[in-house]
Length: 329
Image (cartoon, rainbow, N blue to C red; front, top):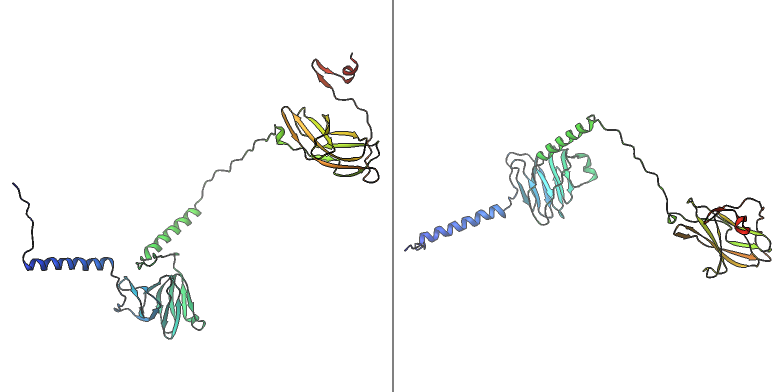
């Protein structure tokens, strides 16, 4: 039989070793995941001024290149970089001069003297008193870099130098591509096929005369009704005239032409419209109103009667003239 042994700390020294190991693990985890270095390193860098804020800001020392957190008045050295998170403003002072760093701003202090300060504003805005504006020189970086932190999180901003190099390489490649001579093919001609309207529903009947209005009735003048033709072969038109707008009771006249002359035998109000029939399709136009009055209204235009042969009529056995249809051969 095999027995699996189990170690049980019995000595007091063993218990102390286990406790120290646990404390070491906790201490290492805190430094790895929760601790942020507080800025305060000076080294041999030149002190140029101080910065104070109304909340925690992030500052990178030029010598250590490590981002830390500052929550009070802090010394700023040459080549240091400061970032103000969202909702936090900071005031930088040097040689009795100052400027305000707005929230979400990133600035690097490049050069400083007694009467001149040179900074690089990588992101955000600064507010300068008019009397100190001449002492501050603000420049922009090569690349338009944007650094964002998650809400409520204090993180680390990467070094901008590799990003600037990548931006420069991309810009040079873009310029080379634009200046390179390209052999482009000539544009191809776009051919639009002819549009054929071969259905009656593709058209609309447009009425021409008479217009809606009042006309003087004399009982002997022909009133001309006309409309625009539809370009389809063997189309038949129907003129509808009624004394009601609903055309419930109407008189219908057919024609192969685009006009008809009508003689009215009594005055009154009339409505008229045109319908077209082609093969098995049929469409209607809009309607117009006429008022034939005995004592007033526009004069009906006179029509000149002309004699012309009527169109041929097609019957069952071929073409016949109107005379043959009425009186036979």
